[in-house]
Image (cartoon, rainbow, N blue to C red; front, side, top):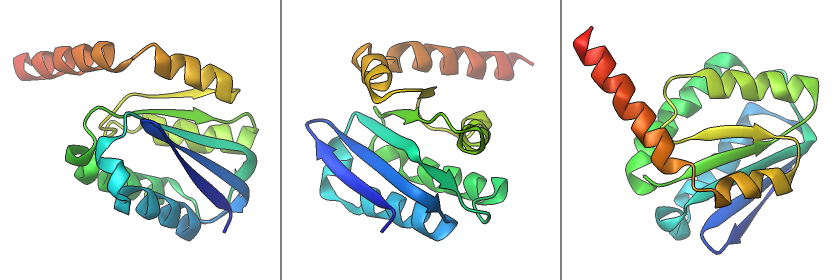
Length: 142
């Protein structure tokens, strides 16, 4: 298994290793969301410092996984997602993931786990929600 899930007080820390295929990425996601603790989490940290995306981890796959996350949104409406990555290929993959407009929660990328935890502790959710509300109003008026 190229990943480890570690449940923490109000969140989950996911650490990936080696080349991660789409099947392994999906398996980690499904394992996380199937756990009873998922309903009450406030954050997800995805650590890719020791990982690289497999060839089959495409934009299409990422888009489908974002749609799946959207369906799971009601289970964890107060989640924030911090990604930790520095490798060029992984940053490109993460950038694709974060650029999709489907994300049901705030996402940000950091070079270290400490930076990710600092962002999470700053509670970025209210500002993100206000920004989403403003975008919805803007779209409704267009």
